[in-house]
Length: 113
Length: 112
Figure (cartoon, each protein chain N blue to C red):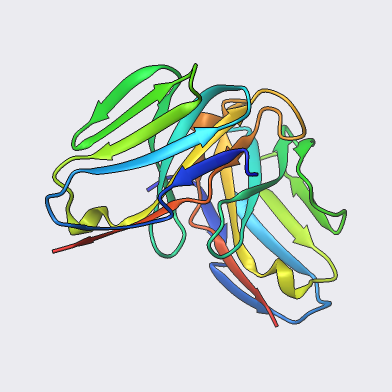
């Protein structure tokens, strides 16, 4: 098992609500990347945080936002939830830009109803 | 067209069979990653490679940078190999620069 933990593991929200997902990074890692994986699809890059700053963003609207804390743990916030936001949200931690050496969390399964 | 394409999408095999999963990509990359995802979502890294071939137990991964193609082979497959296998590349340009671009995955089911 990796040292990357995500919470909660499962979540059900209503359309229009807001949600916060959490990720603790592997010890020694200072970079956290978030991915959205819809059913039957590969993960899609949402954004990356490096030393508490956003360091790259995929094709996701501004209602997807994030934070990274001094201990390098991270949050993903999604406002005004839509049904299509239902997906598995994965976070991966790495050291610097060594994204291929990233460790993944188990994911948070979000269902929007 | 996706930047990373995997084939087949689904694969059913009998225990003991030799399995090949293919990955083709259209972007410039520095390296490629094979990942295994079990039901429930957790992703485990299998290989990271930028050239040639790597072997770990019954798993072998090869990459041909010129042809932009990689294969993952499983010898003597076992039901515990049943999972989704995902190919991911590190893009060197564009909006995803420096981050991973994933294929859709190949769902493998090995029957006893």
